[in-house]
Each structure stands twice: as C-alpha cells, then as structure tokens.
Image 1 (cartoon, helix red, strand yellow):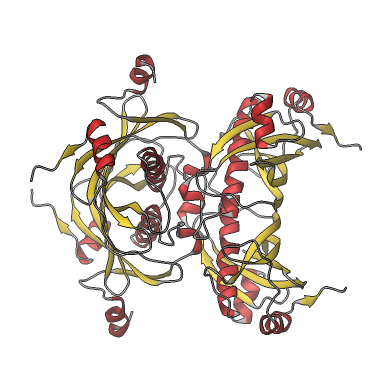
Image 2 (cartoon, chains in turn red, orange, yellow, purple):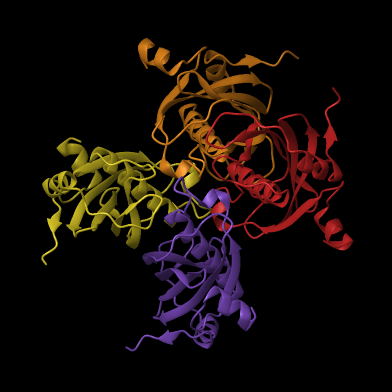
Length: 148
Length: 148
Length: 148
Length: 148
C-alpha cells in the first residue's frame, strides 16, 4: 500500500500484514453498523492467511493457531460499503503461544484487538512449540520474545 | 432451571439470565469446534433479550446498548450438538455505561466474557444515562454502582 | 404443538418436524428484515436434527446428507424478535437421494423451500443408498417413493 | 479478467460482472466444505455492488432489490483457500422485477443460481418499476425483455 493510501486510511505504526476490505451487506445489522462479531471474522481472515504465509498448515496432525483470549475495542461505527484497511502484527512470543494485534482503519483507528493464540496439534489437545523458522519470521515482522 | 440442571452444566455463581442452547452445525468450523465469533452472537442474543426484558427498545430515537469493549476467554472447545447453558449478569453500572458478564457452560465453564456497554441514542452519537427504573432492576440482578 | 398454536402460526398441511424460533438480531440486515441466507441455516438446523432423529450420524466414513439443489420462495418479510414456526417434511425418495420440504410460518406461510438431498459417504464422493430402516421412517413421515 | 484467467476458472458464457474470491475459513463447515448459505452471501455481494453500479441506492424511500425466489444448484464442493470466480448477469426484465443469474467457478462451474428480484420502495411494500436508465443498462449487459 502506498504512503498516500496508508495516510488516507489513517494507519499508524508498523503492520506487516495489510489488506483492503469493503464492508459487506451481510456484515451490517439493522442499526446499519457492522456487527461486532464480523470484526472477529476479519481477524480470522488475517490470522489464517498469515499462518499460511509463515508455512503453517491446517490439517489433522499439524499444529494450528487456536484463539484462547480476545480483547477488543470498538472505536468507530462502520457502515455498508465503507472501504477499510485490516492489519495484523505479531506481538509477544512465548514457547507455545503468541499474541496478535489486529486493527481496522477508516480515516483513523476504528477497531483494535489483541488475541492470545496457542499452537495446538489439530485432532489432539497437545500444545506445540512455535517452530524455530516461524519464530524467526515473527521476530522479523516486529514480534518480541517474552522477557523471561 | 432446576438445581440438578445447574449442577449438570457446572454453572457457578448467580446469573439472572440463563438460557439453553444446542450447538448448531453453522456455528462449527472445519476443525469441528464452535467458531470464536459465534460466541459473540450468543452474547448478543442474551444482551438484546435482556434489554427488552428491562423495558428497553430497539428503535430510532431510543437509547440502545452499543458494545464498546469485549474481553473474552475461550476455555473449552465445544462441538456440534453439544447442549450448553448461556448466562448473563450485569456488572458495574456507571452513568451512561455498564458492564455485562457472559458465560457458556458445558460440564463447567467453557467461555467467559466481559463487555462494556454504552447506551447511545439510535440514529445519533448521543450517550444516554441509564434510566432510573432500569438501574433499579440491574442492581436487583446483582449489578453494582461504580464506586466514585 | 397444540392445535391452537398451529392455528396461530397459520401452519397448513402435515409436518412431522415442527420447531419454534425467535428471530435473532444477527439474522436481520440493515433493512430490518431477516436476511435470505439465514433461512437456509434454519433449514440446515431442521435437516441435521432430523438426520440424527433417523439414526443418521455426521462422521468420516458415514453417509450424510448433502444439499444439491434448493428452490426457495420468500413470501413475507420477517423481523427481529418475531416468533416463527419452522417445519420440515420428507418429499420424494429415490435410491440415493430425496427431497425435503421446509417452511417458515408467521401468521401464515412466510417462506417455502424444497431441497434435493443426496446421501454421500463423508470423506469420499461415493453416493449411498437410503438405508432401509431410514426409508421406512421417512415413508411413515409422509415421504413417497419415486414412481419409477 | 484476461482470457487466460477466464479459461483457468472455466468460465463459460458472457458475464458482465466477474469478481475473484478466496474461500474464507468462516465459510467452511466441519465437513471442510463451503456451507450452502455462504453461496447466497456471495450472490448478495454481487447483487448489491451491481445495484450501486447501476445508480441504485440503499436508503429509506428508495427502490431496492428484494429477493423473492432462489433456485440454486450445488455442483462441486469448494474448500478453504480455494480461489474462485463469482459472476452475475441480468436475465429477464419485467416491469417491477427481473431475474439475476449467478455462478461460482473453480475449474468449471461449481454453483449456479437464478433469483427473482422485485424492486420495492424501502420502508413500504410498494413495488417500483425498473427505472428506464437502469433498464437500458441491464439490456446492454445481456438482459432481455419479457416477451409479453
């Protein structure tokens, strides 16, 4: 995204993942605003494509990201056909979990969210360490090691 | 709900709103677990029916509840056709906002969520004080005044 | 459901499956009407619980119902908090497929839908014959054999 | 879309509206296939953006498209992260209604749908004639007048 586009959306800070989205009819409720659950599906879209970009997979027997905690702030109402930017960045990395930060931008910050993601082997309850190659990529994208 | 049913769901604490739900096919993703956004729709269902039960309405010109903040913890995976209990209770009341606590129970706590709700006049951005009659009901349901 | 309730919903004809539903906030769009896709999820809810009631399962290696065709007519708009009745009945049975009829009732018929359902072994593309015990139940529920 | 891309998707026939889509995690059910209701939301996305492109609006007092009938055929299962093409074309135009044809393509036709759309003044039940300028555009896009 060009610096002009980033400025138009009002995006602040560094975000390794940026995607455009136009608000869908099906995302709006009868008060003509995007429903609060729809924002979580935006986060999910970013999360799963980010996971694939890191070499992750979604298959039985493979480690995958599971959401264990969400903190979300709804700052501006959005409406049908609004053009927004969706952003993701990794936060703090522990051994088998990490945080993600997500934001939605529309002439400034409209939504901010932090999630705790645990890596779990699909088909079991086994927690899995962040693979080393993935950890390197996450750190290069601005993630930080947990100080401990 | 009978004491036996409450014990079977593993419900702890006092909850003025309790509702049964059977997990729908459409709520599960391809890992066969309830999607994290679906839980927010459960909270919404409780919130809107609770609002109606307090004498609130959903109409242009009327005050209505708007979610400004969500903190959610996903504690147990749920699957298709699981029978769960959904609960809501009011938390802390301020002048134009309050908190709600929500939980989903399935042989114990599966999901816990706190939201900050702001009362906004629909069709404007005007914040509205919690009506006195509603405040009385919320306090009777276990809500507490913000100490300040 | 009592004859008085059936009359209040305006239900006509014989329906072996009848369920109440209260329209959810999340099912309504910004024109304050139930979104056309939400009706298909009602049909799905009826279909999967009907399948379970016939002794069917949803698991890898088991036959399950797959929708191959839908014909739906939207006759009345429905709105938030409307109380409706959802109904299902089997239609015409062939060897590996059958039709379902669905309806939504709110002071008369609001929505009518016919689907063609094919039985497919989950995890393969193999079509499966309707099991004989299931066929007997479907005929008892008003289904009819395809004349051929 | 280039002729090579059209060939790769297996698109046949003339479609004035073509859009790419990558299957979302939230659109897939626990059998790892796109849920049948999700296809209707694709159709809705095409319909509302097409309506805007014709000069239509979505507002109280304005005519808008209302779905009165859907006939849909599900021909191929689609899965997470599949890249598909979504297409729309106008069909037969009457005075206050028209048909739309929709399709989803993934190495050939995966889904085909015809809907009957009625123009209704939002906030009333009044049917509205297709505006002349819009009719001209629809005919230019391959629509045909109803022979009568």
